[in-house]
Each structure stands twice: as structure tokens, then as C-alpha cells.
Image 1 (cartoon, rainbow, N blue to C red):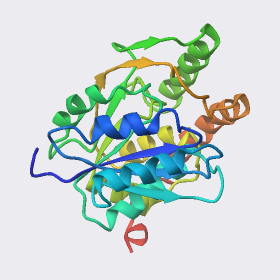
Image 2: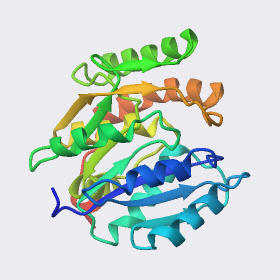
Image 3: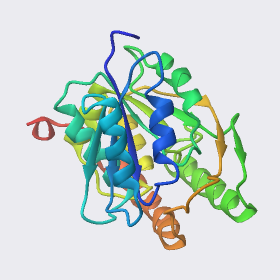
Length: 250
């Protein structure tokens, strides 16, 4: 694994209380990942925190990309991935900035990436844990994943968690096919792209902890839009929207 170039993409919006500590932990790992933070015009000191860490670690290991407005978690991640493709990374990771995704779980997922694995998901279901979520949020998450399993495939248990590891080939595939959504539901759409193009998806159980600092950027309206979008993704899966073609590949 030491020969693989690994980049971790972290989307942020008002994460000044978390991002510095997370960067320190990630850049202390022996497998020497690089980190790119994609910030959607935070109103707090998130960008200043990252810039200070760049001074400490250097611009080769830590990068900051900024966008002019909040434009979806998924859009932020894939903006970062597209930029990092130019630097020939082998493995691409996405994770949240608020420590809901434990950095210590990362190596378990990276070890599952192989020549036959396109995407590895850090999964809360069926064998992981969720700590600190209220009942309503648990119910919405369960319902969204049940709906996706019914409409897309029951072989995937967690469609909506953003702790993921991709091969470079998978990132190229998803970018070439293209995607419709920018928010959290893009997590389900990228799974659909992998499935229809016969890419292998694996999962490992994680413990998901609700944030202890800062506020979630997810809104109820976005959750509702995401639930409705699952139907559209299922239709796209069946009508060929996500199939890789020679036209996509140009």
C-alpha cells in the first residue's frame, strides 16, 4: 500500500472547529496520504484554519480548493476529485470533516481496495453502529436506504454514507459517465453508475458518531429531495443513463 498515492477529499462548510484537528490526524498516518479540502465559501474561519495547516505541512500534502457558494456536498467532493485526477493519485477517499467518520477506520477500507474492487463503502448498515443520532434522523436514514435497496438493488445496504474509497479507474468512470445530482443523493447515484457498469462494490462496518462540534449542513428539504431523487436514479439505472459508452469516453 505504501506504493499507492492516496488523496483524501474533505468537503467543508463552516467546519473551523473540526478541520484543523482532522487534518492533523490524517496527515499523521504512516501511509502518507495527501488531503484536499473543498470549501463552499464558509462564513467562519475554515479556510484560514486550512491555510495555516498548509504552512505547517506544505502544499504537496495539503491543498485548499474554494468555491464561491454552497453547492452540494457531492458536487464539492467531485470537484476535488476532478482536480486531483490531474496529479495521478491511485486511490481517492471522501469523508466528512466533523469526525462522524472516524479516521482510524480508514485503513480498514483502504486494505479492501484491490484490482477487483472499484468502490469500498464504510457502512453503517447492517453491521455498523450509529451513535448520537435522534430517532427521526435514524428513521429517515433507514427509510432512504430501504427505498434504495428496493428500487436499485438489495445487495447494497448503505447507499447514503459518505465514507468511501475509490480506485482511480472508478473516479474516471464516474466522471466520464457524468451525474445529475450535486447533494447527498449523489452518493446513491455513484453506486448506480458502478453497478450498471459491473464494478465491484465492497463494504466494511464503521461506527458513525454524530458531530460534537459545529452544525450539520444537511437540511430537511434536501433530505426530502434526496428521497424523491432515488426514484429518478432507479429509472436512470434501467433506461441506460449510466452506461459507459464510447461517446462518454471521449
